[in-house]
Image 1: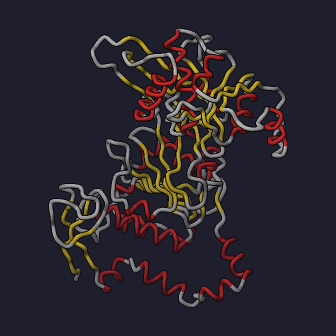
Image 2: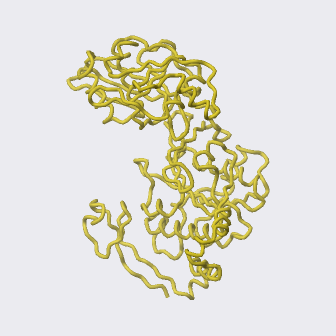
Image 3: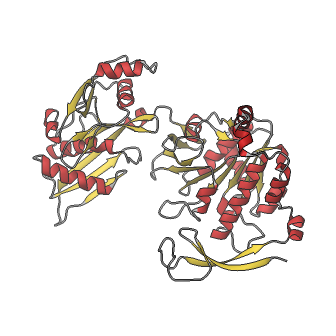
Length: 484
């Protein structure tokens, strides 16, 4: 028989407490403790259901266990263990870039995003690509859609699906796992983890208890059979991952897709990655036939830009190892009400308030009685401080009703004293600007930094710049009068 133990679990932080209280003792949130029953399954029931996962893993590996000291003193064994963790590339370059080179064997990846953003479509394309590369089975287990619905989407992407791609519509975890030939399975997709439920847990699918238990069992399964696994997860209305934070600790990689409604662009970001850089991003565009890679995001983001547009500045940014050119638009006008409005899309509101205060203090431009609007074109969200100079330049351009010089990029952080501070990855930013035909860059004042030095730095990395670019170095905001 199953033994039950009543406990209380916080819906915000996942902390478990033995007694109910109005406030969680860990995260201090109110009314978040929910009762759940921890069910311990007897050995007889485990044998009947076939779920002795942890015991089986231990028994199968008992003979091969070695001491840590033996591994450390045996470099060959360490190399052999490392070589087992090879990646499976999807050949979807934007996805592979964010993953760090492809899916690690035995890894578990959580993919989240708003409804309709393209989670199922992108993961289905990844399954198709992997099925063409490996001989083992690629299995899609969906608790949200039927086989006919998945097939309909599949046929929109390709008319010739590989024979080793299998579909299963099932929401009971045990039934889904028992239907798999795990020794012949090379990749598994679960869509979504919130719709899966274990019959061992006395709660509905999507609850904190079910999400934690299901994720943990899938993790053990993935590690035991060395199968890369993808879980699609829901998000809350604030855009955060739905479910306990424990899920984030269990998975190896967390990916998130974001994009503005009405825009075709989709940005894939990594929030956690044990096998790669967490700052890398991938850019896609959404079409009826699936997600298409955007190989040259800078050109796409700048398409449709008006010549000599007031309040428009080009920012040379870097996400991970990748440079971008992004158009930043600003609009200022006298307010019609007593309190001026501050509105922005894709930029931090608190940072905008700071920049407006610095402009008022260290320039002759006054925006205290103006409504201010900032827009990052393409639906991108900029977090790096190097965008400060481009934001300020666009605001001054709008206020003065004067267009900024053509073919000019901006980057630099602005301090509270009005100084323009240096940023990193200068050579990459300049390289991207040159590639798209820009001939001038407004940058912070840097000691012994010239275009020739940057050119030499790039040549050492086998990157050649065909066209020269003029560097306009600013020490303070007051120096902006040189160009506006």
